[in-house]
Structure formats: structure tokens, C-alpha cells
Image (tube, rainbow, N blue to C red; front, side):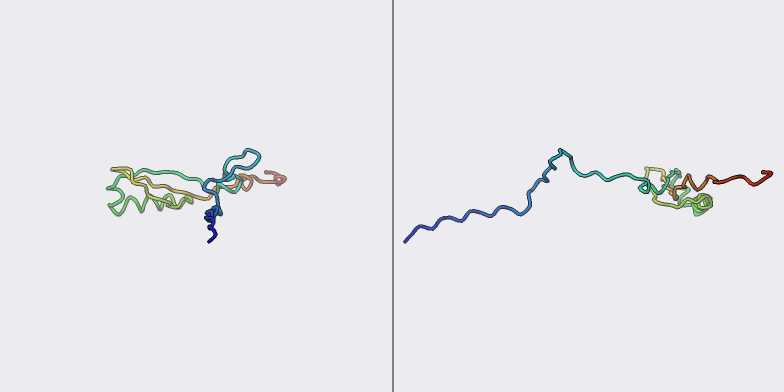
Length: 105
């Protein structure tokens, strides 16, 4: 009876570690472009009592909302809470007037 040769194990389809491109470039990094940062943020710190009293927090959020700010997240900071607010970033080109001023202005 002829001897059977052992089967060699198959190679894995995908390597465990990613290969680096020939140019020596590292892993892909997300790009940052003009549309990447669409919001501006601000933080207001309040005490736990101000959050739970039923009056202070709604007043502060209403005041911030009048300026275009939205509540994004409430962050626990021990005995205080940080309110993370955000609003769409204003485009600088929109705020500039283009053209000539009317006569007498």
C-alpha cells in the first residue's frame, strides 16, 4: 500500500496584520476639510441642585436657544454638571456684504 502524503494546511485568506503600502505610508487618517467642522461648541457648568430645581435649567436652555444653541450632551462632573451646547457654525462669507453701498450710506 503506498504511503499517503500529509496534506499541508491552507494559508489564511487575509493576513492578521495590514500591509503597509509601497510608499511607506501608514494607516489611513481621516481628512479634515472645509465641511468637516460644521458646529461650534460651548460648555456651561451648573450644580446638581440647579439641574433638579425645575427652573434654572429650563431658563438657561431657553436663553441659549434664543442665541441658536442646542443642548448636545450633559456631562457628569462630580458635584456639578457640564452642559455641552452646540450650534451650526456661521459661514464667514455670509456675513460680508458684497457689492457697492447704496448712495448716502
